[in-house]
Every structure is written in structure tokens, then in C-alpha cells.
Image 1: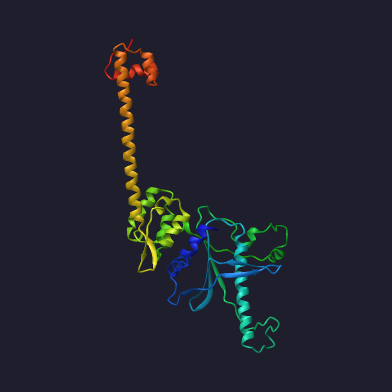
Image 2: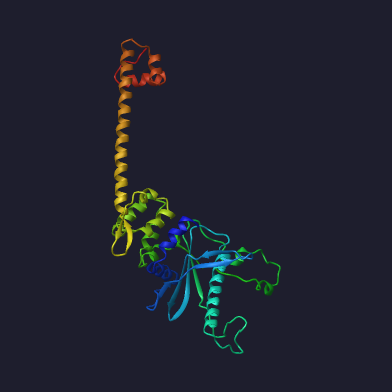
Length: 334
């Protein structure tokens, strides 16, 4: 995905932000035993020629809630990917493959004794279990994501086949949260600064709205974390603000932060100065033109210049020139 994905990957790799989006998705608070520790999302792939490549998840963590242990996968998308369900399935297959390999390596290392119901050929016991991978996709784009949301959406029509045969085609569901469509009342319930990032994303179409929002939430935006600024920079069109920021280390969080309010105030002060300078220049030009017209009116009035020539020099029609001359207090030229 490029730059937006890099910014989103860094931003969403924090426990309070993950907790906020999960609680929104579930519609309830996570239990007291909730915890999630990042584990490696770097997955190797070997092709038919034996060459290695890799896939990398945006976030994969060892999680626990309600007494159940599982793997939590978070993927960020800033644009609609027409092969996404397949790509997500590939990531999960590779994750499960890695789990199976670790179980096999552990069984071999521990020299386990296989029973009749175990699978000696694949070094896998009946009691061995995979931790389930629970995936949530965070879509940050502006366009509405309608399809594909599952593997079936990518398939050709099976209309005409008996329903029993159609069920033989496997499916894989992508569970997508459209971040820009989260209702305001749900955003306000979030306990992390995700509420402010989403608040800005929902208002970027109107400079007036996002500027008011920044000032209304000055306590946060006066020390906005760099990871949050990077998301705003990558996913919005208000780069004129982010370009003016200066970063200092926030001792409490250990992350660099910037004063967005200060940058916004500076931009508006400069805009006022530019406006004043432009107004002065326009005033000078208008004054010079008025002076030149008055000189032409006087020359015509004194009979030193005919009205046609004067109108040409003023770049006006003869009728307009005569009207302006009369309005300025001179007699209408004959």
C-alpha cells in the first residue's frame, strides 16, 4: 500500500488504540483479563523454484480475553483491494503453517511418543491444537468498500450448479471496519487518541470544520504524537499544516509530539499578512489608475487631447470614458 500503510501500521501498533477499535467492533468493553502482545508477523514463502520471498502482516499479536487465548491480526487498507480476501487467506494459511511447523519441531525436540490416534507421519498429535487467528481489517479510505468482502465475491457465478455442489467451493470472509464511517457517538466512547484521529478524518472536507475541531480539542492537538500526525499527513489533504510542525520529545510517552494548534495559528497569521500585502498592492494599482484617468480627463477638458485618443489610452470604450469623466465632475466632452 505504500506510505499510508506504513503510517497506519506504526500508529495502530499500540495497545490502547487496538483496544478502542476492538471495543467499537464488539459493541462492548473488553474484559479485565484482556491483553495482547505483538508477535512476529513476518512470514516466509518458498516458491516452486526454491526461492524465498516474504509476506508481512500489519499486526499480529498473542491475545487473551474471556479466558481464551488466540492470535489477533489487524490489517490496514487505505484503498479497495480487489484480491483482498485471497490475500488475507494467504496470510492466515502462512500463519497456521508456521504454527504447525513449531508444533512439529517441539514434538521432535521433546521426542514425544506417538499413539495410534496421532499422526506420526506429520509429527502431529491428536491433542495438538492451533491458536485461532482472528482477523479485523481497518479500511481508512474515502470510497465505500462494497466488494469483495469474501472469497466468493471474487469467484465466477456458479448459478446453474446444484446447491450441494456450490457448497464445495470454499469461502473466506474479510471482516472490515470502515473507519471514516464510525458514528460520532461511538468515536466519543473511545479511550485512546484514535477518537481525535478519526475526528479529523471525518472533517477534512471542510477547512472550517477541521480547524474548529482542532481548537476545540486544543489539549490533545497541542501535543499530538508523531505517529498520529503521520496518519493525518498520509490520509488527508491538510498537508499545509503538517509541513509547518516542529517536533519535541514527550517525556511521558517517549514519542515525539508536535503542537498542531501553534502551526495552525501561524498559518492563519501568515495568511492575514499576505492578504494585507495583496490589498496594499491592489490599492496602489487602483490609485495609479485613478490618477492616470484624472490626467486624461483634464487633458480632454482643456482641449489638449481628443476624446477618442484619451479613451484608447485608458483602454475604455468612448462611451464608458465619457461616462466616467462626467461622473468625476467634468463636462461631458463633445
